[in-house]
Structures are given as structure tokens and as C-alpha cells.
Length: 246
Image (tube, rainbow, N blue to C red; front, side, top):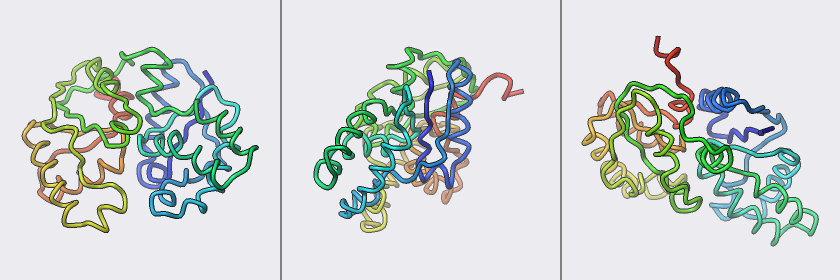
């Protein structure tokens, strides 16, 4: 398949290793991965803070940049959710018939990484090796908007060497929520404290998830307590091989 990588602003700026991991993983599985240089923000920040008309140029840009691919993959449940759930709304309210048609052509081809692997490519064992104790946090957008279900867990269970431990109260929000963590800091910190406690209860070496934004929030809490627990995007675990461990 000819697959376009939608890296997202957060990953492109702060976690380029995640994009490299997605590319390495998909190429290892025999697919062609391209990085369209013209890609920009999906408009999620604008949409979620009420500047929905201002998201229109980004929706239009997305349809132009990602048209014509067999699939578009993103290592972010939140940005995949924005494109799949809200680009249609922006186009319908502020755009024109041409944009609405363009959105309908592109949006069905956009997948969060675990969706692409399990549903489209039909694989759960991607040949990964990661000999560590790991627990998985299902982020809110992937859980509630995309409904990825157990796809990430099915992929993780097939990783050789891994000791995968269930996270208590896994479906509880970590308290990030983008600007929620800034506007409601006290509530956010209380939610974070609960999540950190549950992570520590597993005795894991690493916490993984499908969104680096949530991992940054939880990782900050783990780091400030000097727990020694690391955070790693799902893509980076799935891209790991026995050669990396040597």
C-alpha cells in the first residue's frame, strides 16, 4: 500500500522518533510510506477552543495534501478523531460543496495506527521484540471517539519478550485534555495523581499509549516523583526488534 504519514504538530515538534517508528514499522511490513511536506495542523486546537471557522483553511489543506493515497496513518488518536469526526462538520458549516466532497473522499482513508494495522493490513504480530514490563493507557479520543477497543492490546500481546500488565482503572482520563489541563489545573492534577498511582501499582518499567500528548502529561507526573517509569508511544514498541536490543 502507498501510505501517507500524518505526523501531527505535537509529534513533529516534540517526538520525531514516533514518526520514524511508524515509518520503520510499516516499511518492515512491506508498505511504501510517504511524508507529504505540505501538511499542517488538523485544526483540533482551533475547533476545541471555539475558533471553528478558523479551522476551515486547515481542513481544506488536509484534503489537498492527503488526497490520492491508499491510506493516511497518524500516531495520534486525538488528531485522527478530529479529522474523522469534525472535518465534515467544519466543511458543511463554513465550506462549500467542493470542500465537502473532498472531505468525504479523504476522511474514510484516515486511520489511527492500531486501526490501520489490525483492520486494514490484517496483522497483529508485527515482528516486534520488547523485553520489558509494560502497561497500556487507552487515551480518551482513541477510546471514546475512535473506539479502537482492544486493537492496541492485541498488538502488544503479540510482542515477543513483553510482560504486559493490565492498568487499573485504565479507562479513566489522565486529566490532560489539551487546554483542560491549563484551565482546570487543580482537577487535572487530581486526575493525574490517580493515574500515576495506578501506573505505579503495576510495577511497570514503561507506560505506553497511542497519544504522546497524554504520555507527556502522565510522564511529567511520573518524572516529578522520580519513579523511574518511562513513557513510550505504542509505535516505538511495535517498531522495536531483537536487533535493537543487542
